[in-house]
Length: 330
Image (cartoon, rainbow, N blue to C red; front, side, top):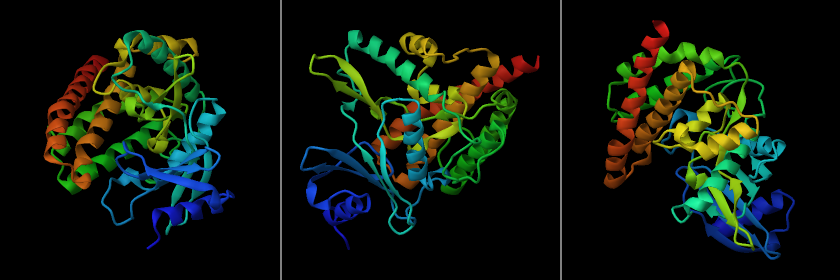
């Protein structure tokens, strides 16, 4: 069995870098799926190496080939001139898949950010996310191909995503606040609103605080150092990013973010069809969060948190879809 140091040297060599310059290797925490390590070279350059679990490890259907999606996100972010890692090498060999990328400066956004710092940071984040959404793809869905080829329209792609997570919930016997069939029936009432989305935009879909790095400059100012962990990206509706950006909350209350988003040309309107779509995307994310606890074999504390914090939000999203569908049909 190859140890981490030897494997890191092989990856560096395969990327055209001198493996003899590797002087530091440390695991990075915060990820829930891939193994992540930071590589330090003699000149101070830092890289991040991601390796997925073995194919025999239980997971969700959409999680196959996540590194392909992550590399796609970083390449697209570079086009949009958004702070994010740069792809150095993507190893797609089934035996040793990996992604080597540059490291971004900073630490994950946390509770130490003051209110005075938060407002300009959220405004800048809004501008960066709006730039991401200007990048378009060749079709709708996951570029990894985990759920099949890209679809010609958003409804086809998103309904396939819903079907996949509901199949996962059935297979794993996930504890949902409503039956899988009830959830499926409610969600289907909102699907017509998906037809308003006609352009496949770049969507990160996992922009919670832990995936936003903040870098304190020499003058003390905090700036966004990078948007990381783009492995769950998809081509779809820009509104889908608003869910994780206000995880378990309401993006409409984030005035600074929305101001920056609109300043950069982003469209953030919350009419009935948009609210239906937002509720659909909330439901999708919360279904993932509830279902993944089974293959992840989370501890009792995490399971209690998911049931107390996430399950009620899924119910709220489903209730909103039902209410708005009645309004739309009136």
